Image (cartoon, helix red, strand yellow):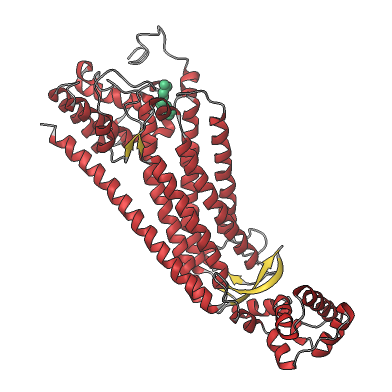
Amino acid sequence: MGVGLLRRGRFARPMEPAASEYISSMKDDSVIFHPVVQINIAHTIMLAEQGIISGKEAAAILRALHELHRGGISKLDLRPELEDIHIAVEEFVTKKTGEEIGGKLHTAKSRNDQVATAIRLALRKKLLDLEERLLGLASTLLAQAEKNIDTIMPGYTHLQIAEPTTLSHHLSAYVTAFLRDIERVEHAYELTDTCPMGACAFAGTSFPIDREMVARLLGFKKVGENTMDAVGSRDFALQAMSAAAIAIDNLSRLAEEIILWSSAEFSLIDIPDEFSATSSIMPQKKNPVVAELARAKAAKVIGNLAGALTLVKALPQAYNLDLQELTPLLWNSIDETVSSLEVMAKLVASIKPKREEMLARAKRGFSVATELAANLVREAGISFREAHSVVGRMISMAIASNRTAGELTVEDLKRASHEVIGREITLNPEKLRKALDVENCLASRNVVGGPGPKAIRRQLTALKQRIQTHHKKLWTWRRAVTKAEERLLNEAEGRLR
Ligand code: ARG
């Protein structure tokens, strides 16, 4: 092949091997193999329809592309000297048809519009996988939440016991967050669903091409408008990486809590053996390794986003080879997030809450203090700030005498109020007992979005409906993508004779 199809005109010598190895994207291009073949098929059909090449020429090219589609990437010569998969595909077709025909395949296109289109085609599917995994995790969390409406646990702020809540409410917080991630992924999908083909190098072409036709054949919603932007922009990829980074950031918080809760110090949940590893030296160890790695993967995905943003930051328009370096970061971000979501959903489904421990912790930690203050406002007619101070003094009295909140008495209330606000406040003992009862406290928290049983049931119903709505959207998009692929292949097969 001498200096190669691409170089023989302009250059006298092949590239220095270390240099060609260095600049080749071949090893990363397997992800876009099928998209590149599909784009070539769609482009060839369009060239024939527009009379730019003949029906016979198109048939020969399509026959080669069809064979490649069937046979897979192993049919290609993937040596780095060919630079990338775009050239490898053209070479394959040229070998099959001869250069007089195969040499027409690259009419009115460039690797610049082709690679941008291929990334978008591959990313569309990966974003649907990502949405599916997010929906899977949200559904699993929701199922756990439904089983734990009356599993009382301590809620924390500053990682200090704050107020009682339920495991259902805590897990629903994550479902709510993951639903926002799902919306971000859908937005990224919509921004990705645009076809750059026909932009060529960046300035379009004088051939009478039909960009709309190629976009339609590839199942894109629309054509990328400005041809310079079509080849030079990767913000759709940045959007997808941001959505993935935020999602795995949320996942990492859940992973961290699972790690904390499973420790002896918290002792709120059990992680089953199937998701634990032990130590090679310490025989007693049960390590929460799955959650630890989900936490670590988040760091990589966040790093990928930082790398990609920085890569694009000072790039002049339109195409620069720097962009080639962004693509593997994109795939890594989506793939790591997808696999982390998948395994974490299985872990979440398997977790066993320690109900008695959770309740005991909630009782031990003075978590009812805020509710007692609210009761004093209602029952004794003092201001909230006064009540806050009185209860604060009662708690410090309990701590000094080594008692729990449940052991506080009306005498404590009288003494504390006298000391702090100079007025003696009292409450009948039954009302004080109720105010200090964790279950009672929760039962009254039915404000919209709250952890009370009525409020949480309303939330769970609403969350379930939202999950279903997104499920429908996901499957509509999936069907559209699959149908477009089938239609394209049928179109091609119809032209082979
Ligand atoms: N391998 C390239 C990439 O992944 C394809 C486009 C190359 N374009 C070029 N003019 N060299 O971005």
